Structure formats: structure tokens, C-alpha cells
Image (cartoon, rainbow, N blue to C red; front, side, top):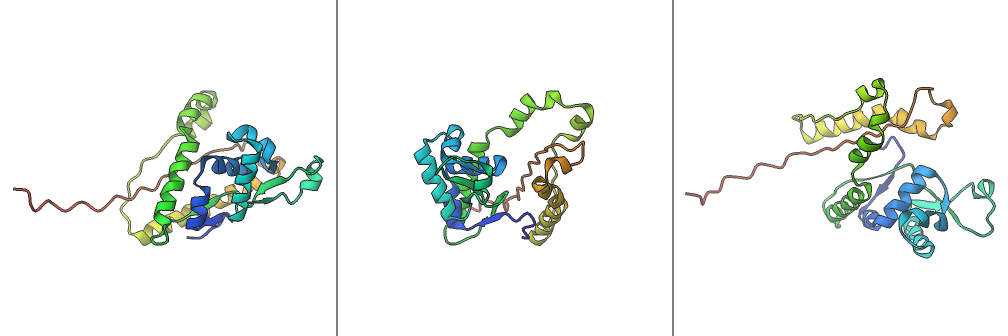
Length: 204
């Protein structure tokens, strides 16, 4: 599948490395808030500064974080090491062999644990404060389609191409965004049905 967002593409080793709540929380914070230090990150990821620093080095070994490229212009804190995310996101594919399926499942479980109840929090914190226009556009869709693997891949790529300009807009200065623009989270699950089980020939 194409990668229009420039996300880091994880192999099985990378998936296993990221399948840890603290590491995923660290990466999420760096992607959302920009460069930071182990000390600052430790306040929000549930680990001591030394443990956070160790996890940062593990993330760096798999190409997910790096030393902040503009650290000298952002702040002056002596020898403190500043880190940044390599890209705005990451992606991985469930591939057979080399432990890829198991690694993907482990990472997905950690992602679901760290994310928690995103929809519930939105309904509690944001939905009551939306005006009519945004409330009308919010909601969920549950659509079943009949496709081949190739056709489903085409659907996924078409969605990514459609979203790409709005994903990449996050890198632009906020003052350049349209005046009515705001952050919107799109949650999308792709859930192919399993093959039906054959009838039990031993049943009488």
C-alpha cells in the first residue's frame, strides 16, 4: 500500500519494540506535542526519567525517534538531551512469517489499551460543547461491503489519497489553516469476515 503521509513503516522487530505502553505513550506525546526530554516526558508517560530515557533509546534504535534537529534554537537547558518523532505517524502490515502476525497483534493490543475509550471520552468532553454544524457532521458509520482483497486494497488507498492533504496540513503553521478548521479524529476499522466454518460432518 502507498504511504502518502511519510509514516515510519515497521517490520516485525519494530512492532515488537513499540508494543510497550510506555514506549507507545512516549511516541504519541512526541508526535502530538513536538520535541521533549526524558524528564519532561516522564511526567506524563508513567515512568521515571531514567526509564523513559532507556525507552527513548530503544525507539531510536528502530528509527521512530531521533535527537531533535532544532534543539539549539528551541531552548537552552545545558546538556539535557531533546528528542523528536521521526514522522507524524507509523504503520505496519500483518505479514505471515518472521513472527509478523504475532508482533502486529501484540502492538494492536497495546494501542487499544493506551487509547482507552476514545469515543467515550469524546462524548463526555467534546460532544456537549459542539455547535449544531459540527454535531451534525460527527457520528459513526457501520458499512458492510462485498469486495475482493485487491478491491479492498484499492478502497484503502483511495481513502488515504483523499485524506492526505488534510493530514499533511498539520505540518503547516496554524495561522495558515482555514479560519473554521479544527482538529477532527477519524476512527476507522477494517474488519474482514472470516471464512464460514464447514458443517460438522460428524454431527448426526
